[in-house]
Image (cartoon, rainbow, N blue to C red; front, side):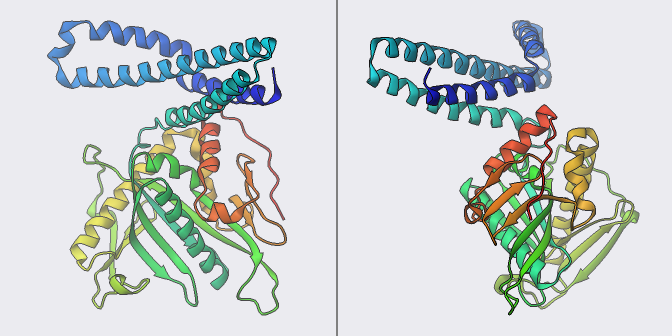
Length: 375
């Protein structure tokens, strides 16, 4: 088998192995048999809600199992075709089969990620907060660079982005910003980005052209729908109003319409200033608070995610999930998975999918990677 073909086969096998582990293959097969039997029982339809739940689970399992078997079969067929073509000296057929394996590897990677986005809230829209760390202008500029990176990532995926809250920096950049990102699986992808992000560069604000290290944190939590009931006691809330300030234009207001809500028991703080109506901003902030409380409950139930969110404790050394080095060399390195990119410009322009895919895979495998940070 030629090296190029074997490389694609290995990539397909890795994706299939992860899919089977995620599905718990033997259990999934048994469960599908059970669901098929239930669907054939006419009494199931006496309870419409239960029937719909059964059909949804059956469709999801049948699709995942069918896709896995299809990829496995096509991989085997193309591998055998290559061996036969090599034996006959048919280079055109070899090239055609290798091209088919390449396309199959890409499909396997896509199916793998789709399967990994099966968490309780993964399909939801998401809020994404960015906060500058200590360091004044440097960190505030870095926070603004991150905000652009996530907006570009969302645009690449065809998501809609709304600015919910914005606190401008003292000289440049931003102190904080909150975005609402709308699109299928927005939370499922973005949830892997929660943590501290570190930038190393020659500062454009330093006349001596020295290298600076800056930190900013990212916090991601899902938008909850009306079917999820989150109880919030009014007595647990501290509500402040203030004059909106932001990037200018429509985001600047001359009245105290912006709203900040502090949930005293948890210490969670949310804010909204995107609307000129204080009433609407308060409603938005309450939805954000409920989403944060819901996300906190999800974390308790998802032990694998705990490490990611512990990074929120401090915006600084020892807590970062990813480092972005612009000088003296070019490198972006994820400190959880070891995934790297030698093109920071592309990453900062929204090319985040490889990092997100690796972090999602790690949640399934539970495998930790010993990764050294970059200087």
